[in-house]
Length: 282
Ligand code: SAM
Image (cartoon, rainbow, N blue to C red; front, side, top):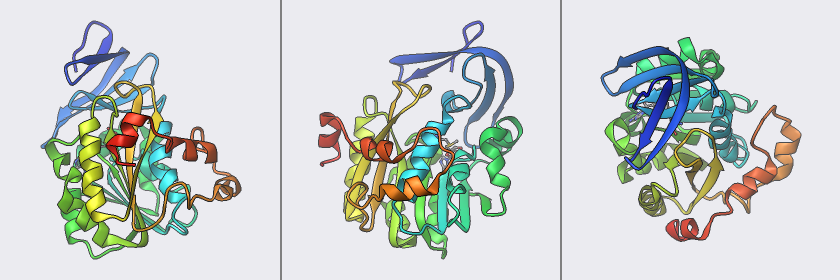
């Protein structure tokens, strides 16, 4: 991340730059894994940045967090146990805990500094981590899924990009372990990146998921703060199709106080542009 006077600039892949007007720097430190930073901006609230990349902005985080959580949770017949890998800002856990059926949501975040900084500076997302239904483990998600004896109905991989500590979260061994810990109707959704800037990552991830799960797909959302604004999640399950098995009445009757996700958005998110349809082999 570069800082021109009064601005926080994120340069992505050396080809695109996004700038946010800076009001105040609140926190910056190097953890054993990465540089963690929180800044106050003029137009997007507080931003959490990791290694100079924008992870969360108070202004639009609801989009990402509602889409990673509610798409699989409104597809699984009765989600009781949910695992979140990464997601130390707490936004995904907040959305998961909106579902009354969820008895236990385990968050496995490798970097305790992300959780601590989010709790102190971004309570909008992190306050959910103090819920009695939330369990926070500071641990490598790859090791957790390899060793745990717990079973989960839904696994959400809310990670950073496929390098550094997150590299193995985009690998075959990890997804074979995810399959092992998913219950019979289990679903896994993962942050997959930009269809424009990371089509290769999405292709590779889909190829891996196809070797491990009978049902695979991808879905889209737009936000303000990720490079290019268009972003994708990968979807895989032991049998639930993300559109054919979707019951929109469940969303309507749940009456959750959401700001982005609804039944139309759910179905629309799986309407993919041609280049992405081909990339995910649909
Ligand atoms: N929404 C953001 C995005 O799409 O870029 C991700 C937000 S979340 C803060 C990403 C988290 O994944 C980071 O806090 C990072 O420490 C965590 N992470 C990366 N690799 C991990 C691993 N192997 N196990 C657990 N957490 C990991």
